[in-house]
Amino acid sequence: MGGVPVFSPLDPDFRVNLVDISRRVTLKTKLVFLPNPNNPTGTLFTETEFTTFLESVPEGVIIVLDEAYHEYVTHPGYPDGIRFIGHGRPLIVLRTFSKAFGLAGLRIGYAVCRADFIRYMHHARQPFNVNRIAEAAAVAALENADRMWTRVRAMEEERIRLCRALETMGYFHVPSHTNFVLVDTKRNADVLFRRLLEKGVIVRPGTIWGFDTFIRITVGTREENDRALYVLEETLKAQDSR
Image 1 (cartoon, one colour):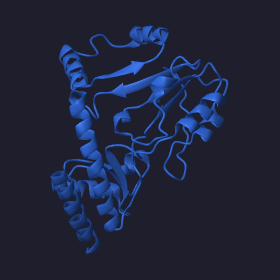
Image 2: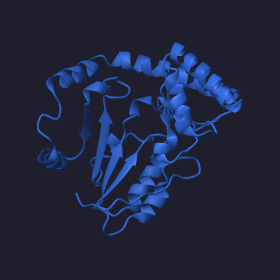
Image 3: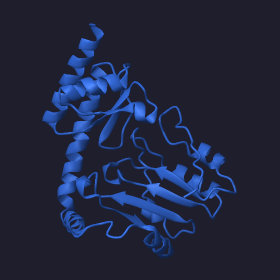
């Protein structure tokens, strides 16, 4: 739409740097897009940091807060973006059914914000952007949210186990508040991605985000995680022996 993107680097802890972003805001800035937790690092910023950021940004700048991984977070300092709506700042909170609710294939999510913002979105959105099957599935998911929370707690236990195993193997991972882990294998991520794929293990190579030696591993079931760890270790050993 003719806008000029302005990028802000992550801080050394792989976290979104709200201080740096606020410094880059100018009189021309129309919108600031913030993921919390962040993808692909899994890191987050706290409510205190977010409040300070809001106070530093001119009142007319729209803040879009992407909370796609909201349901996975247990950190006590995590800000629930919806609670900030109506407090004077133009804020749009985005959430999805693609992650914790498991409805990724149906491509359904939602925004929470002021009514006038919703009206503007209706002017721009494509017709029939959400189909009836997706709507029915989303409503059913909300009515059975207990099942989602059970899966989330099970994922959290597996994430802890997966991270401990990676540490034992000697690999650094970014502390995550999501259902994935960003791991530094110290090898070319694209090459490793292809070799894992040949063995039926799918990860995301970090090269698409500028992390050339990192892979992002989604936390699966215990059996899936065990297989991923075994294949990863065997593949890395094979690479080292060449």
